[in-house]
Structure formats: C-alpha cells, structure tokens
Length: 97
Image 1: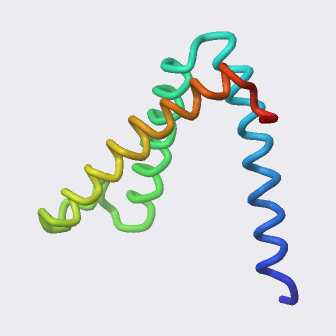
Image 2 (image 1 turned 60 degrees about the vertical axis):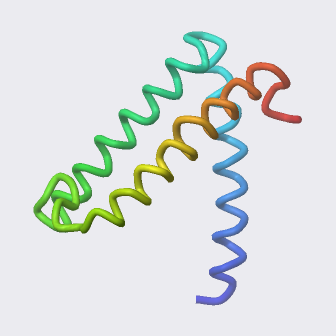
Image 3 (image 1 turned 45 degrees about the vertical axis):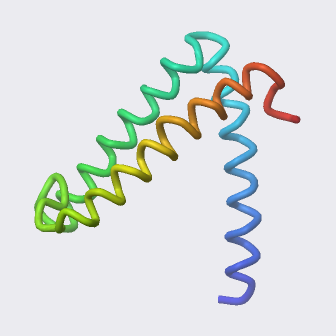
C-alpha cells in the first residue's frame, strides 16, 4: 500500500491528540492517579486476553528472568512514573500545551 508510513504517522498523532483530551477530562473528574490506574488495569486486561488468544498463556511465563527484569523496569519507569507525571501535567497545563 502506498503511503502506509505517512498514514500511520498521521493516525498516531491524531490518536495521541484525542487521548490527551480524553485523559484530561477524566483527570478533572476523578483525578490523575485514578485515571492512570484505571487505564493501566484495562491495558493489563487487554494484554492478558490478547496473550491468551495468541499464545494460550495469560502471561509469558516461559520467558527468562532477564526479559522479566527489563519488562519490570520499563513498566515502573514508563507506566508508573512517566504516565503519572504526564497525566498530572495534563491537569496542570492542559492538553493543548
């Protein structure tokens, strides 16, 4: 397909913009911490269902300790710290800035 990279880039920026507005509205109603935890819970549920459908396991138990360690570090830095600060920034300065 022609321009698949360009289309993917435009859709990614569109979804990111929509997501920032939705997260800001959710954060104003229930708070940044609750909306972040809810999003992570839904993402975990989605990934478990997807992993069961693809690999017939809820989590990749057959992975070694090193991939689990990197996944844990990535989750703590990205999901716990990064998104928590991002959601709070959406509430502080708004999604448009």
